[in-house]
Amino acid sequence: TIPHKAFEAMAMGCMMVNYTDILDEIAVKNIHYVTYSDFGKITEEKVKEVKQASRELILSKYTFSHLADIVLNDIDERI
Image (cartoon, rainbow, N blue to C red):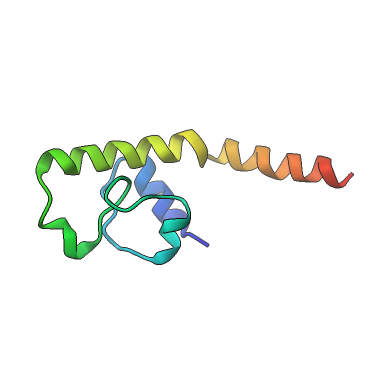
């Protein structure tokens, strides 16, 4: 599973540079995060784009409200 701190950081618009292959389950490299080895190679404009894209991704799909809906729908399907 992806650590909650990663979701929180991305939702705040922080740049994710600690890569773990599990990030690929929700995000796209160089769009929502960059690897530490690539960080020094990107422009400040690209940094802003990545930070904004990661924030938009999390807020559009991975808030606690979204996760609660998934759990409740799962419960409804099992009843």
